[in-house]
Length: 95
Image (cartoon, rainbow, N blue to C red; front, side, top):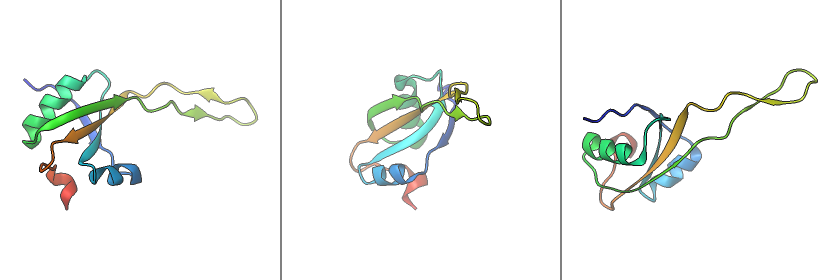
């Protein structure tokens, strides 16, 4: 029923600051959409999601000696910023 490949959660300075706003960042498979992610998060963590924003991270540049920089292949994942209803939290991030 819930076929979502969640690669990992993102733990950076920006994501830690978003914890205060009740927002969490996950890296997910590029084929996933917002509706699937919302349903999966609500079912798996037993929380209420009020918003899902997604974006693809920028491509990385590859440098080779004195040659010009060229673009590597695109990222094969999306980043999802999940906003939870006040009063809910994801247990992985509360400790």
